Image (cartoon, rainbow, N blue to C red):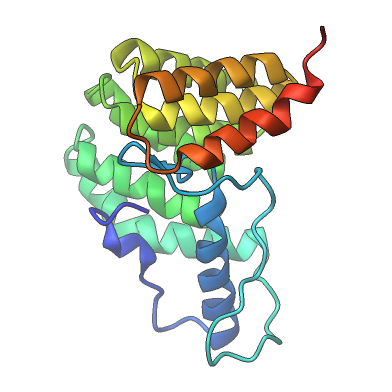
Length: 215
């Protein structure tokens, strides 16, 4: 999650060690989500979208089970409670809306997260970062068309946005089985971002997708 919202990382001291370790593992796993693949016009990872897995935490025995989605929802509701209280006073507070969205996404409550990102976009429709984050959550909640629509809207505001272009390619490839569309998005990414520091990774993704293009 962006550093602007560190509170979303904090785990309540009242939770059991098992749940704390599990939630920490989930948060680490979320690093492979769409929307985290590119940061500041650089590709951070080329991981294909997968379910978050329990990560190995240094010094922590790997015997604690990952918490259930129900437990994670409970954690998110508790963590978001102060933010929601503030939103009752000012429903248009973009920072609180966005921070609430990150809390729910950290707990794999993607639809709830998308809803709060959407409310933040009502305040500032041109915030491409938030729109790209929303697209990620829509994708993971099963709304592929909605995710693609948000990314295309982002590109109307910022045609060179690296996050949007990379994620557009990923979702076209894995969500729509459209390797040609994916390659087109990534080629546009390279064309409009010539100084992309992870250019070789994008080129590798293009090479992997190209064999699936019908000739």
